[in-house]
Amino acid sequence: MAATALPRSETGLADRQRALGDFLRDASGAAAVEIARIGLLAGGAIQENWGIEANFEGGILAGSQRLVLRTDAATGVPSSLGRVEEFAVLRAAFAAGVTVPEPLLACADRAVLGRPFFVMRRVAGSAAGRPITLDPALEAGRPALAERLGHELARLQTIRPPRADLAFLPPYDGPAARIAEFRSYLDRHPQPRPVLEWALRWAEAHLPERLPPVLCHRDFRTGNYLIEGTRLTAILDWEFAGWGDPDEDIGWLCCKGWRFGRLDREAGGIAERAPFYRGYERESGRRTEPERVKFWEVFANIRWAVIALQQSDRFLLAGARSLSTAITGRRATECELELLMLLDSGGIAAHA
Amino acid sequence: MRDLPTSLDLLALARELLLDGLAPLLPPERKRDAHLIATAMAIAAREAAGREWTGDILWTLAEFYGELTPHPGPLPACGEREHAPPPAPLAPFTGRGRAPREAGEGEGQSSGLLARFAADLRNGAFETSRSRERAARAILWRLTIEKLREGNPHFLAANGFHDADGQEI
Image (cartoon, rainbow over all chains, first blue to last red; front, top):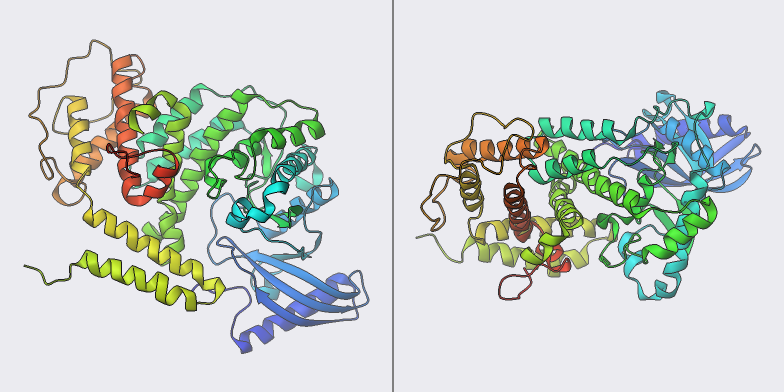
């Protein structure tokens, strides 16, 4: 098992917990901080999330607090922001009125936990994809949830460059540059992927008109937001955020890979597209265009396929002994089927 | 000649024991691991029990290119024409093992043809010929469906893909 930032052994944990307590005390201006409980939260192949219950004596967090500490897992994936940068993105989203956990403190000093990390307020709710899409108790509330997600996405897109606080984000250079990156990756991949090559060729020939860039979450999907009942309580996991096209996150949310057993519900497995689009259009004042969304949905499937292949590369190329990441590469073929269905609808009847 | 029960039977029994006997005893945070293991076992079983399709695909590709040996390199962009010479006649494919398999001695030829096909698709080599483009798409469908038959047949079924007899794949 890979090493975690906070060791599970009692001795190692005591040392790190003391260092963490000192950091929380100094960064919050408290006279003292007592960590009552700390434990690794579920999920997080790329990042680790630790739940913390702590009592702050004075300072900006005075009182009893339930927090989440987020830091790098032992293995990351390309294109992921550092934790201090992710903290800055989270602050920008919070300030723009997006429903996110309140970001509180960040630490770049590796002397504390061995890795940079940040601390945010812990928010109630569950992000597990299948219960969100399949639990009958949530049925009536799902369209409103989809509409709310559209609203949230529009709020996020009020963040636009230039922004001094987000100056670390690379300038947006459009989908053509990312198509070139995907091809470059495929050139290094041990197996040819003809379906991906075919879809990339289509994407190259159908580049949408360029719009002014906005802040994209780039993993805006079911499984990355918390709900309590059917109420949205937080949008999570901002490590892939960057400047991009306003329709990129729309295509990603609607990508079939994120429908968790409800393939018929095209908005993240929770609803038709209509309520999601309605929430987005009402808040943004911008109409969604089917052809643009289609492009970004194709792009989403290509990107998810490449990410899946990169996950299995950790085993194939780097020798990581993780079944979870090794088996994820198989999901690339699911994306390829969806690409065929999106781009060759006439072929479905011949092969179904 | 091998002892019985077969390895596939043992694998099926092992999977049942894992899912029905062990998984319920695991703490919630480890149940996903049990299901991952079961998924890996199911893929292995389907690949071992399934028919050999990689040779079929390779044969189809060889037929598509009118040859049974790899081309030295991909075609230039838009390099195929409607009036390209027809593929060389081939004896009909009659069963497993006729064309080189994906693994073993045929791997070089297999990956060579597939790589050539991928490179030609990148370059749009078939876009000037409707028939070639249609034939290329048919290969893409077949390749993808065959992979998913073994890798995730539930996903195929959920997308409305069925066997010729109407059964879920």
